[in-house]
Image (cartoon, rainbow, N blue to C red; front, top):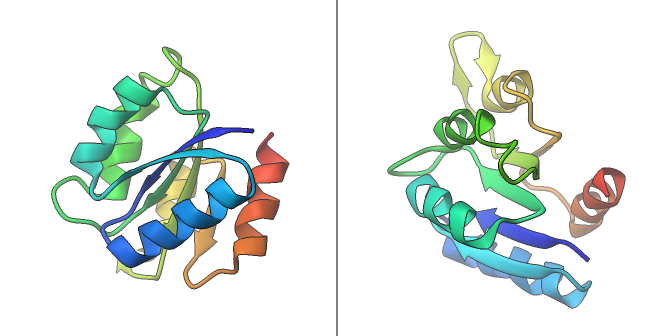
Length: 122
């Protein structure tokens, strides 16, 4: 199974994802903003990052941009997630997709949807 870094500032949602992903056999580490996520990314070297977009400190788009060039050092897949929001004419998930994430999920989503996304990537 995959080593997964989950980044979301909603502690309850982060915990729910962690519990589910561990239940189905993945190893999971959580961060609560993009800054902490960047630090853990280097330490954990995950196979997959699941990141929210709207967060304090470093948001998900900044996180994706920050790791985009260093991804060759420790290749990992990225799933972006967001409950909505727009910058200009594009919504956050469209922007994340344009930045090269492997999948994008709109909140709320079912755990089955997340599992299907992960299975598609591995």
